[in-house]
Amino acid sequence: MPEAAVAETAATAAAGAPLLSVRGLNAWYGESHILHGVDFDVAAGEVVTLLGRNGAGKTTTLRSIMGMVPRREGSILFEGEETVRLASNRIARRGIAYCPEERGIFASLDVDENLLLPPVVREGGLTVSQIFELFPNLQERRRSQGTKLSGGEQQMLAIGRILRTGARLLLLDEPTEGLAPVIVQQIGRTIAKLKVQGFTILLVEQNFRFAATVADRHYVIEHGRVADMIRNADLDANMDKLHDYLGV
Amino acid sequence: MDVLGIPTQALFGQLLIGLINGAFYAMMSLGLAVIFGLLNIINFTHGAQYMMGAFCAWFLLERAGIGYWWSLLLAPVIVGATGVVIERTMLSRLYQLDHLYGLLLTFGLALIIQGVFTNYYGSSGQPYRLPEEFAGAFNLGFMFLPKYRAWVIVASLLVCFGTWFVIERTKLGSYLRAATENPALVQAFGVNVPRMITLTYGAGVGLAALAGVMAAPIYSVNPQMGANLIIVVFAVVVIGGMGSILGAILTGFGLGVVEGLTKVFYPEASNTVIFVIMVLVLLVKPAGLFGKER
Ligand SMILES: Nc1ncnc2c1ncn2[C@@H]1O[C@H](COP(=O)(O)OP(=O)(O)OP(=O)(O)O)[C@@H](O)[C@H]1O
Ligand SMILES: [Mg+2]
Image (cartoon, rainbow over all chains, first blue to last red; front, side, top):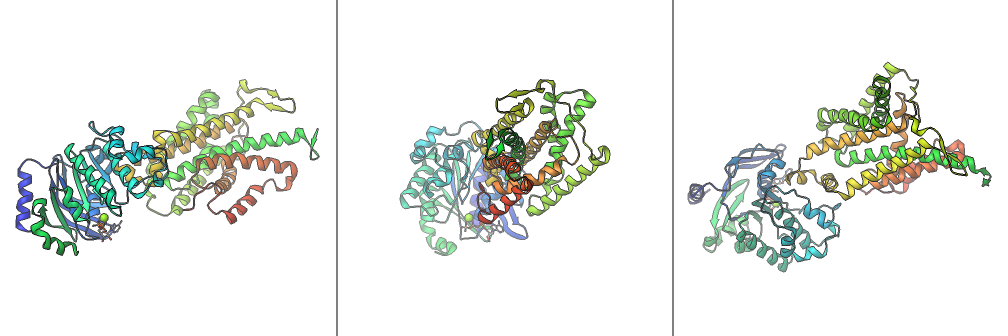
């Protein structure tokens, strides 16, 4: 990571303990060593993205935070407490919720059952009617089989169901992937509303134009490491660098 | 009165036997389907666990004077607890591996359990006294229906419906269905999936033991009783399709009746008819009548 970014990460840390603090995170799938010492912070109330090329390790980073990789080392502090050795169900109970890249809608559950599946882990989650206000499309499809929904509706369901749980940190893996522009806009507005309500969001994105509309800061992941950190305000000035990183 | 040259008395008699057998096929294949759905293990110990249920009821009665009704509750809990131990100490090590390992392990366990019981009790059966409430029969006009057999049919329907209801219509069932599809994600939502898997195996084993208790007064309680049943039950499961709850129930009762009718119309085939149907179904629909192609 360049000096300035290191200093910035350290500065966020000094400004009061961040909600999530990842240090020296390594992760493996069997023999393949995927993450090689990932460091970053997310402050409470922030929207932070992980940008990076295909295969850079963005999804693996989210899955490591969630305890869903076979082996991980390093430190993941959530609300100041170490979670790197906890099973994924214990991590979820601490108040982190995950929306996977493949959405993970269950075919043997209808929309209502999918929505109500994740257990409430804390107070302060949205109610079902608040979720339907955010995503009115879902309300009309409550009795449909989960996987009979359109791609956009499935994405709304995948996001909606983790809002009920009271988790304060949401890990969203490419929520706009493969969706029509109107739906992408709707998801962008939703993320903005959630931020206003105090949710902290760690977002994986390929589409940095979308990321720029919702995020406070961006971390660039390259070959399983954090290569750079860019504040959203400085994005225009760093466009060339970003194009290099992302190969676009 | 005759139907197609067969006395109705004989016809209904065999139909009843078919329904009773079907009740056991249904309860047994239900447990197998539940276990396979979540654990991905074909539980070959199921027959031995059914036998353990029957023996447990027999022990409770002979040694402790605990009767049939309490056994219906206690035997499934006791045998289910042994299932929990088996899952924790052995099966849980096999989930990353191919189906075949689970099948071999549970098959080996079945042989060991049956061997131990045969060693102590020989292969002749122990009679289980029919509870007094069940003495006698209902006169249906066209036939006598022994009270206990009527009870077995009703009770197994209740058990099947109850299991179906829990899985398809409750919150717990939605966890089970979701974990069958994607256990890692369900766990990442905060559900203790490993514990759920352990309890599911215990519940499936408990179902087998419950069937064993219900069978005790009808068939003699002997170490091989499960080995004979399990072969047919596996054919039932193959025909119905692995992992389908409703499929297991309908196929269980249906095949029991088909088997009973075959005894009336073509007795020579009564022992093989289920296997013939299995071959035909496999040729036409390899995933089974109610199974989904994987
Ligand atoms: N289950 C797995 N087993 C083995 N290797 C894996 C597995 N999942 C991912 N990988 C490898 O880990 C590396 C990082 O993958 P990851 O999914 O984290 O990338 P990503 O940044 O999310 O990419 P994308 O933008 O394509 O989603 C890749 O090289 C990938 O092949
Ligand atoms: Mg990814």
